[in-house]
Image (cartoon, rainbow, N blue to C red; front, top):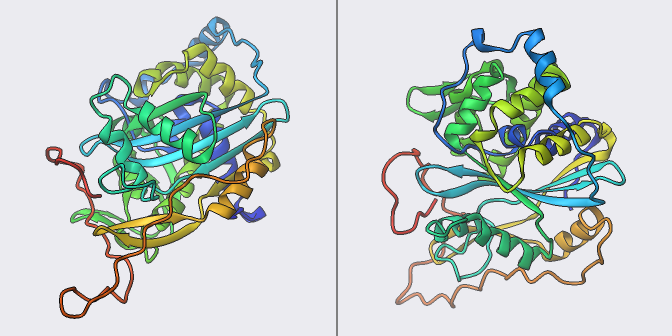
Length: 356
């Protein structure tokens, strides 16, 4: 299983607080964007101290009665309708612990979906009343984890929320050229909402592809939650209230704020973030990611079932073996492994089914 070292506690804190401290802020950190609605507030629109005090007195937070709950957090590519970010967050309220599981978007879930990837599920159910329910069903079935609530946010919502925070500070590990003219230089940078989007979506220059992007998203989570922490609990709750329409969730605002308030008190050492381990393979012309079932079963039993019964097996399908190579009729397999798919520009009409 993949467990972060003590030197990564700042990433861990960011993941936990962003995931449950403020459902809207949760989406800022772990996901990538939802509705193109109101423009981001200007600096002049920031609440004054008197406004904060007045709003604080009007926020009534109910105690959280759950022993533990799971929240599915997804970041949506607005144009393609794909879930670019998928995270399951377990909040052990009774013990005061938060564990988050990042699921790579290329994770293979079977050929019921055209690409075989988990990020295809939301698109397939796009015409349903709640497309997210299809993805919830896959997670519940294959990971054996009940999902209590969900949160989704789109790229536009992500950009708006980063701007509402006043941007984020990130030590960029390498030069990022998201698209021609859209470049972030390495080193400490102050990123606005648009630049933050480039940072969390960039993949082409990472040797490990989508896993490199997941690691970059951890850095973004860290930076976002630090920005939230700097504002303090009261302003955080006020910002959450003001930006609640930037996300889609089945959580009522009052319950979201109660969870936010509760999660804000979780100790750093009780917050961890994990990534599904596995290996890259080719299947039906698509680069997919095969989860290591044994390691994932142990991880979920240890960190995501605090009061539930352990399971012995997860029904996550294996990637089918390719047909035997026949020199006369078939193209030799690629000895270098996976073929990188092109970056999506986030523009254009939907295809019959997206391949990214």
